[in-house]
Amino acid sequence: MIKRIVVPLDGSKLAEMALPHAVAFARANNCGLTLLRVAVSSAPITTAPWGAVPPPNAWADWEEEEREGHHYLQKVAERLHPFGFEVHTLMMENESGPAAGIISYVEQHPEVTLIAMSTHGKSGLNRWVFGSVAEKVLHASPIPLLLVRSAQDDELPDVITPADYRSLLVPLDGSVFAEQALDIAGDLAGILKAKVTLVSAIPDLPLATELVAPPAVVVPVTDETGILANYLAEKRGKLVAKGLKVETKLEYAPPAEAILRVGDVVHADLIVMATHGRTGLPRLWVGSIAMKVVQASSLPVLLVRSKERVQGAEPAFAEAGTAAGVIF
Image 1 (spheres, rainbow, N blue to C red):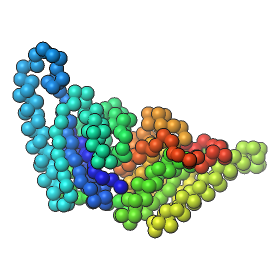
Image 2 (cartoon, one colour):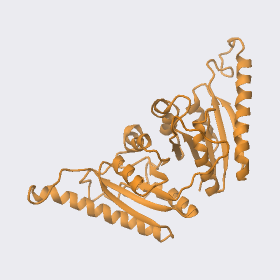
Image 3 (tube, rainbow, N blue to C red):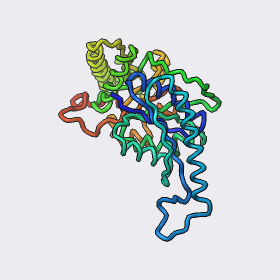
Image 4 (cartoon, rainbow, N blue to C red):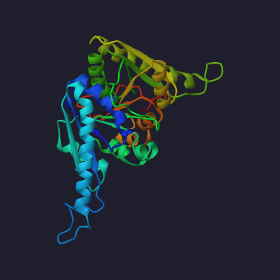
């Protein structure tokens, strides 16, 4: 259950594109929001070396930025008041940058269990996601991160309309790590009466039949397909037993391509996926499936950072191996 959501804002309309989604999550979980703006000082006043002289007008510049930041956050908070949940605002300074400030705030406030932020702000999508704030937060966040991709020319109206999640897509690779996205997806689907689609992938292979290839080529693919199909059916059964509407999709395609394709087919409103699979956390975070999906999808993506180890649990394919190389 999400207890509180923090929404980092930089003062731009593009960054505010995360607000409809944050509102939807807040209403679904009956929790509050914290609107956070992090300012960066080129010469931090509070951490200046003993005896050092702050730059001229340093305090005045910071006080002016603080006033403007508070005013901006209060105006945004006023637009959220009609929804009836608690909204906090905070203007803070961090000499290491916005991402460090966001992570520092989250670490010091255990009641915050979700970060919701746009992948587009003043610096533009590529710079923010793949070289700046969102990427750094994605790497360091100890809690789930909801990334909302906004178009360059989008404008958020003054009246905020909550996002509508009727279809959730959950990628699974057969590992206990990827499965940890199921809990939050199941809870959200139960509250919102949303449909859940479980998707897994087998990367494309050259066409192979017994007429043109020896059985050794065909059997591993067949085995993997059967294993994955049974695995998805098992997970579907557990969710259906909770009263959820669930379907499964098994695609022959590279994982990121399969996720995006199925998302279009089932008209998904949200992708919920773990940031840990068979390849291990570092590789997945740095440049594998999760980042490909975030980069290419127009859908919001909820990234659930799974635990490094799950007590007493083994990967679903520990005995079967990875014949077709399914990796999330």
